[in-house]
Amino acid sequence: MSIPREEIDQVRTATDLVRLVSDLVGLKKVGSNWVGLCPFHSEKSPSFNVSPTTGYYKCFGCQVSGDAIAFVQETQGLPFIDAVRMLADRAGITLHEDQGSGTDGKDRTAFLEAMERAVAFFHDRLLNAPDAGMARSYLRSRGYDAEIVRQFRIGWAPDDWDQLCRHLGASQKVLEGTGLGFINKRGRAQDFLRGRVVFPILDAGGRPIAVGGRILPPAPGAPPPERHEPKYKNSPETAIYSKRRTLYGLNWAKKSIIETNEIIVCEGYTDVIAFFQAGLPRAVATCGTALGEEHFTTMRNFAKRIVLAYDGDAAGQSATLRVYEWERQHAVDVVVCSLPEGMDPAELAKTDPGALAQAVAEAKPFLKFRVDRALDTADLSTAEGRARGAESALAAVAEHPDALVRDQYVMGIADRCHLGPDLVRQELAEFVAGTRTPRGPEKRRVREVDDDIPPPPEDPMDEGPGPVATRGSERPGPGLEALRICVHRPELVAHRIEPFLFSDPDQRAALEALLAAESLREAVDEASPAAAALLRQVAVEELNIEPNEMGDPVDMVLAQLVRTAARSGLMGLQAEVRRGEVDPVEGSRQVTEVQRWLGQLDQDLARREAEKALVGWLSRRGG
Image (cartoon, rainbow, N blue to C red; front, side):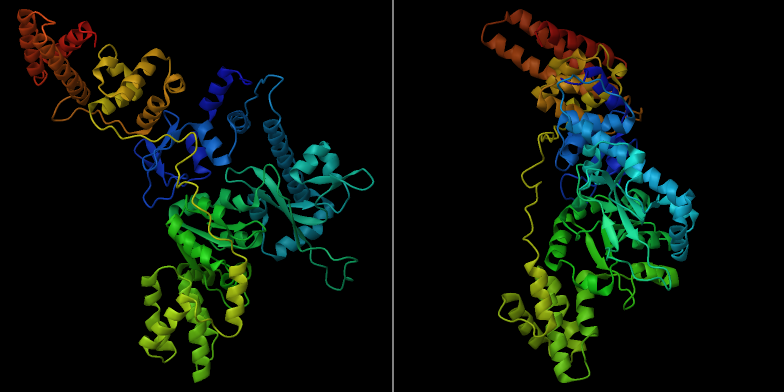
């Protein structure tokens, strides 16, 4: 192994598993554990448990389990060594690797360090540099005070060729690997962003992974620029930045998203900040790409209600068929925030923040938004206008995959367009069958949108999780409860429990691994896959061993475990007597003695001695 074992253990110990998982999953404290929706399969009720005391997670739905390193491997698609490097960097631990170890993890660390230094550089320039005066004035005009600037780490990229590159002093590999710079035609390092307000893009854990830059609007009366520059310029995809996986603002919005079970999705950085200013700090934005599958996979781990807060045209042009598929696949509700015509969230937040909050609260289901929009923009004062409006609305309804949902909209369309419900149903059936298409702009719009939408990908979790995921039965009974005690409170069962008491081979192997190891972590690493999965399971399960009116739960669990094993041993002894392998007199004596001890297991005062006697007897019989 290229990293010493003790350093890997140090990384595991230093990693806050709850905080790590919280980057991707909305967790809530339940007892001593944290619970949320599983990131490895779609579910409606939370079954993903994280134990901060043992350092393990387990989903009781798909049975996936593991530790911090396994979680990074599965969610980031990294090999073991790179996952360790990532967690070491997160914990501030220096690893001492063999010379022959790979470079991917080291490159990633260097890229993240360079991006952090770049964001700090841009932010300091905005706050203190004289050349950032126009940028500060522009931000004040947008209503950004010092608190907002600091919260979102907004910065300024000086209008110079290479100030950032000189400040970083980084290699060409780091500059190009982060997208912060490049080598120009003259062979000199050149900054990627120049003369722009900088919006850092952070991952869910709060680490800068990319930057976006907005050009300043021309000053009043100033001549037009010599050459056209795009309004926004964003980092390219890199080893640390994937647009289809990143949601701008998620690191700041997570807390409010989890509390409200709602996430607001908008189009850009300024819209996100506007929602925060309006008292709705649960907004995120896609980063220069359309809302896609991996965005939904991330969002459904945090909230069930997803509010699309685009301007009217953008909302209407969303990937319609995919939205319905995502609703079904991820068990979420997608609703659309209706904004005043021609206004985006940033503008509305500045003029009427209360109206923005009300629009979010009154957001409509995606299909209802489309139907209302089709009818609201139609001329319903004429027969021809009502017919065209009904066609547009029915074209939208026909795209929904659920016949029950489609039929719910028939009466509404019939009422608004003064049409008979039976006729509307007949027309809808033709749209669903594909034998009818709408006339006019709606027809073109639907075709353009649909042509750009690839078919929904198969759910990668349908075939089960990756190599870290382990499936198995729950194995209810005293054996599982005894293992819980062995993991969480081993001192309570020391010298009282033996592997031969377990009839289940995986439970027996799990206890053997525990007894041979110095720690739970070592036991998991050394156990068979099935036994290791069992140990990870009990590590995240609650242990309730408070004495009650029935007695001491630990004693009762061990008594039941011993009773089951002794009865099995007794049956074996009787079979040996019948086969002549044991002297009948000796066999009869043992049977009588064992039956007496079994009866004493139900007596509070005699239970411990009977338990000890039965374990000793089983041990003498070879388990």
